[in-house]
Image (cartoon, rainbow, N blue to C red; front, side, top):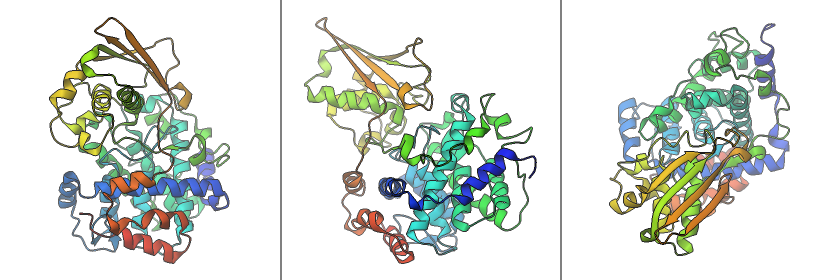
Amino acid sequence: MENAKFTTAFAKAIVQSDPSGDQAAMDAARTAITDFLACMIAGANNRTAGVLADVIGADLPGKAILVGQARRTDPLVAAVLNAYAGHVLDYDDVHASLRGHPTTVIVPALLALAAERTFSADAFIASYVVGLEAMARLGLSVGSKHYENGFHATATLGPVGVAAAICHLSGASVEETAISLGLAATQAAGLRLQFGFDAKPYHAGMAARSGLLAARLAAAGFGGAPDFLDNPVSFYAAYAFGAGQPELTSKNWGDPWQILSPGLTLKAYPCCTASHPVASLGIELHAEGLKAEQIDRITFTYPPGADAALVVTKPGNGIEARFSPEYVFSAALLDGALRLDHFDERPVENRIMALASLASRQHDETAPRMTSDPTTRFVVLDIALKDGSTIQRRFDGLPGVTDPTQKFQDATAGNPAFADIPDLVRSMRSEADFARLLELLNQNFV
């Protein structure tokens, strides 16, 4: 590995990490896991999750749990299905450094690994922190052109984050980890053109499975390139479009942990993160009494690149509407809230689309292009009223929730079978605690 400077440093950082001594990082991880489990349980019985389960063979024998279902299956299948369930509602967390969704790929893979080895809750949480760190740092190092040119970072960076988490938890060597990361990277795939379709959450399933498979193969002695960051035809040569900075994968690793800074955004609304600022502004204006019939024209102004994920202007159904700020703002203003049923498979409501048809977007070309730096994200809302007056509001950054307790209760419909999970996640430490979590997750959600 003498010609693998950056890959070796990355692998060493992963296997030699010990975030368990950082209480703030571990607490943040517990909060994030609680938030994600709510999303995964809620998504488990989605119709398309059932379609995917039928096609890929959820009836295969195995010991890995299926969340929200009282059955078990093969670990690779479980990784796909649980990750899909976690992302299908688009309600799961995001991280600015990778411009994607880390928890929905890492946690399902670690849950699947529990079918093959025993580990404590503390070890599970610490390895989640490490996997997120690896995924986020790879996101920083690959640069913004990766996403802007059409790759879905959850899918392309996710396998590496998963492999990192599993190698950490398994106590893999540096050499084995480097090969595992390369095997994960060679499976990196996923295009943003799938936003608004069932394929988008399938990206999370692909990534969870690919990272788990990569770690399993490397552990079994399966060969692969040990220099995926350094090779002349490296990950950056294929994916970074000239913007790669491989030194960022390990520079100042864990100081602070990426789960703390810039930290995760736990979603307040079940739709694309980039639409959340206008959602909050819509809810705010509803509370102030603004009525749809007063409005003549709506304009959203973004910095360049900030609405890249918002690929839909005229959605036909609620799934497409997750990626439409025009719809999101209109639903929020009309109803004063955004619920899961605003974004289901049914056709969009005419009353919402009538207001959405008055909205348009533009970019402030004088503003810095949006990057992984959260301070570059903003939206300006201008509303022209029929009486000739105007309203202007600005939202910087992203809204989010800090305590997911209520979100968990809402997403799980108050089902008593899952009611003990938030308290358990906040306190779990031992192997027995983690086994109890698996038991609680492995129940039918009806």
